[in-house]
Length: 224
Image (cartoon, rainbow, N blue to C red; front, side, top):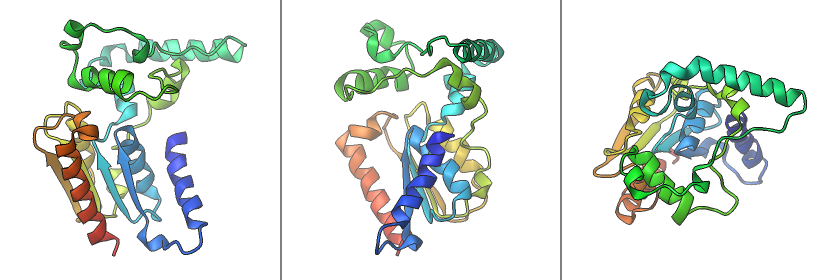
């Protein structure tokens, strides 16, 4: 995965700067970045400590659907992705999914959606959206992401591990799954933010302050 390789590359670049102590290299991954960070940390022991906030397991969700809602259509979607890759190899334009940011979703429909998506639509699509950002992805990328599971091989993490999530997050099951499989380290903690949903851990001052304080203590104690 290119995004996992980006994290390995981060360590390469940081090591090139004069004065850097590579024995004090810590990693922090948020949302999907949390999944890629634990995956990279499983094998890259230059990363001495690992923390995540609201970890999102991108491959599992792309394959199974959020909360396993699309498991019955996996083979159909793989066939579509395979067919699209063949078309693009023959010269067809790249096909992308419909981006949420391009849709005008009424409030009554948002109220029926999982909190991650309803709050994510507002946060990523409206209030905090960068003009160059998009929810779109290439259809053919399913061929790669369906076999990606951030929680697979979590036992290879022997570094100190802190995983933070809101206790009201409908994505909490992803953090819990990865944490339960991290059997290679005794120095691990699952820290829950009372009352917080996934998106709220990004911006609600009360929750952000708790998260920053916890991260400060974690890094201070493990990167001395």
